[in-house]
Length: 111
Length: 362
Image (cartoon, rainbow over all chains, first blue to last red; front, side):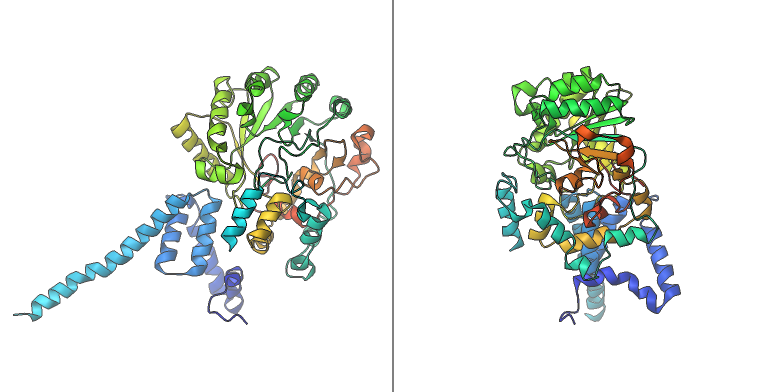
């Protein structure tokens, strides 16, 4: 038994979730596969979006998976880091924009 | 920790594994690793069992299409991923006598493609003589695998683009990435700039230009423990970047998977990536790729004339399982009855869209 909540080897077992709920698991993986196909956005662009989101949701499995996916697609480390910053900027912006709510509340409560 | 091991590998990479007397220079040791616990313990299936699932074992050759001749392991570069373990310290070079035996086969075989490789094939002292003689045999597609930097390595090689053109040679060149950093990391400092210059020289004589009959294709090998994906998307990216940044044209990009043997195996083990890499290969296994795997239409000849199912088997010293084992005794009929020798490195050619010296196969 691994003595950590996250074991890198568990990523390989992701597909096993289908075993306990075949219909939903299958629908999810079909959807997932379809999402990352070339479409209006290229698979390459979607890989960078996935990498940024992986960091924002802080999913170690997803970070491993989409760093490797990026390498496989010839995506450079500069592109990867810019994607991470784009995610980080939105995440910190999402925190900071709530500052307006704080300001509104502060003003409302203050004489 | 891993970083310091990798720095050691990089330092050592100025010499071949053979010159370093590394235990992985021993092909038996490599084969033991490839059949080790990961497979013998049942965690992953042996390649033999995997292809048996779809009735593809034993693997048998089809019509011979490609004769691939390795004219020697000497090279001006010592690339970190090289499956040949080539380098300046390798002295194995094909003699003119063996070349003559090869020419006899080239003239009589039905193969439509002749594929010269190395090492840097141009470093063989009889290379030009061999190309001149072989080009008279009327082979449809005559490939020379050039590492590009050789063209700039010494004045005596500067005219290679003209020489290739004169003999209508199809040039296939390695280019791991369109950025300097990734290229130099895999192939050595300065390799990127020299490769760019060499490609421009080839373009100047007409190689790789749109609608030109002088074929110039590039080979992309991943520079690390990951697989190549989507050859056509990579080709688009390479074309765009090389054109915009360096005004370079080329025809096609072949994405080739690194097989877990020789120096690449050494890297995988030292960087603690071996297990994950083998998992990636097995997970990406594609039975459709087995159908067209290159050992089914290729014979590989070593510098000393021995015959192999492919260049990788050559580097593992797995000679063909046939009564005919040497180019001097070459016989199409006898060879076509052989069984192809396989081990777990073969997963490298059947992953995803498949991989061969001509790129994807599925």
